[in-house]
Image (cartoon, rainbow, N blue to C red; front, side, top):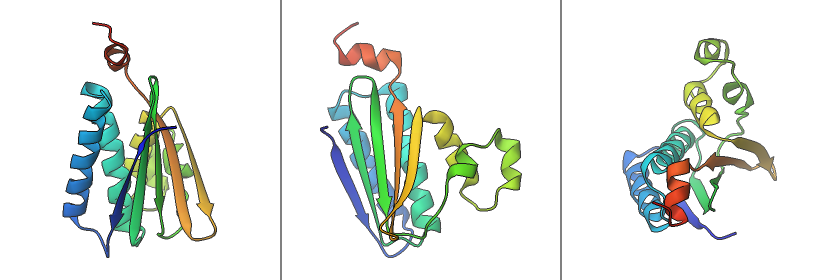
Amino acid sequence: MTGSVFVILCAGFNSAYVDRLHDRVKHYLIQCGISKTSSYVLETVVDELVCNILEHSHASWVEVEMHPNGEHVKLLLRDNGEEFDPLPAINAKGPESLEEIQGERSLGLYMVGKLAASWHYKRVDKSVNELDFIVPLDDEVKGEKHGAH
């Protein structure tokens, strides 16, 4: 599966890291022919997840992989931060039910979960969080990618 890997090494949250990553992700999506709504959704998902990691997990590095194909983009995020189970927030029945969930990451994870077709979280070797998402491409982008007008 072809794709691209973006890595942030940091000693804490810094908006400049997020801005640089955002620019690199946007440039990569344009190179892949992904624009409009799908690009915005993917940029939003990456921004939200990376900001959560940098702000809340005490990670010293974050790795983002993007693997586009004609139907979707697989996002894979890894970090060495504290273990965190995104299941309650992603599977919440609605924003109002998030009040019952502890933690500051809940609303963003709920939104990301709604944008993704599927997702999976696991803790690797008791030291790395790994979260992958499948984000579908909208029909307009699919048509452009295959040359339709």
